[in-house]
Length: 154
Image (cartoon, rainbow, N blue to C red; front, side, top):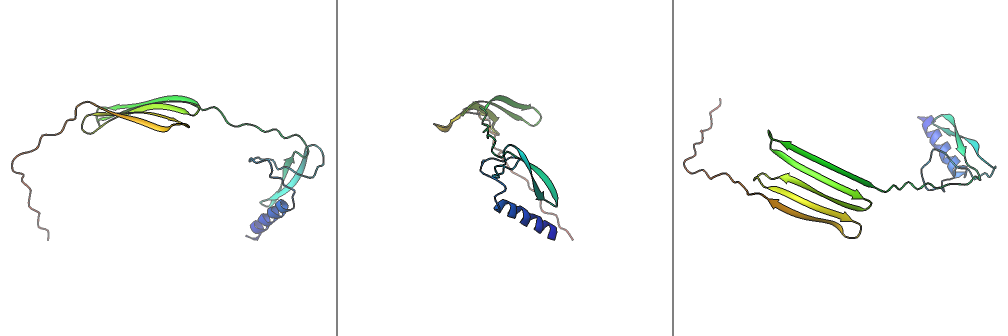
């Protein structure tokens, strides 16, 4: 337990001493040093009870990498299960910040609900709902309903 506490305190002391530079603004597996020793060099860092060499860039040029990729996809999905009556479909297309799509769901009354939607950074999310088909409702039961009397238990 003491070794864990000592390891955490050692890392905090190294960070406070200015050996590690967190000015890059992104996560990296390398720690930078402000020692100004020239090109790349190795700085030992104590972590979890062992010395781990950490590559440092020193005064070498730092190259930023843009990790933004233009989102673009299209997909379709559908289920037609006659046994359970589960019928649904979905289609969606995305190109950048513009998303267009639709989905259809079978309602319990036999109608189909279709939703056409669009989304973008200017108009937000907009949906238009359509119902198609004729609802089918069970006929009401007229007459006497017999209900069994509760059984007596000992």
